[in-house]
Length: 57
Image 1 (tube, rainbow, N blue to C red):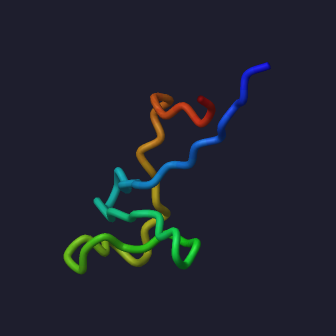
Image 2 (image 1 turned 30 degrees about the vertical axis):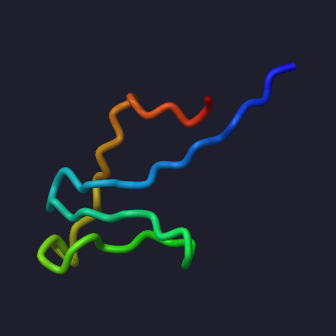
């Protein structure tokens, strides 16, 4: 029997405002990667989900 491993994304970018975030294992939440990529605070973020990420290995 093979073991299936669930993977999580570790980075995401908003296609509308270019906000870049990375997953912080220590806090268990998404964090803005750099102070110059905060994006639009009123943006309804559209994350770059395009079907290429495979959550199961």
